[in-house]
Length: 167
Image 1 (cartoon, rainbow, N blue to C red):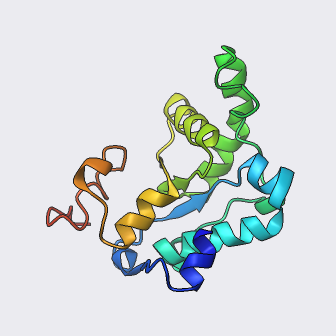
Image 2: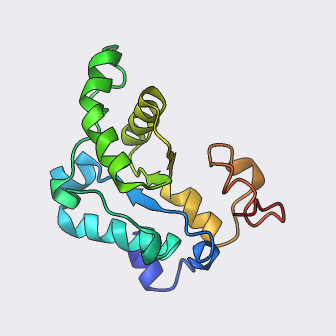
């Protein structure tokens, strides 16, 4: 729906905030949403939304991507199953894939993906933050509240609040 609403002008997102900052983003394709149900058209819409928010020049796709992207290793109950070491071992493929992009942020539309990618990033020493699409969408529209920024990196926590960190 976000892609449709952006195309229709109902969500006035703007990537100008990132023109000078050049903060790089990538996106995780959730298994259930992309590979198991809605397919490549959903993956394409996901990228359209991401690029609309952060700027096409600041989006780095994972390889492979879309319907061929790798699972994060956190779905199917893996986050709750108690086999943390196994889950992290499976997630190492995703971690390496994210690191190869060099992105500062990973859009993770799925809650399981978000938690898993954040966990493997901390566990393996990744240098990225994991964000929800809605958070960055609100930031791009200038309506993200100060209290909604706690999990953003220092480069974005104050953006638009008159407390920007200079690059």
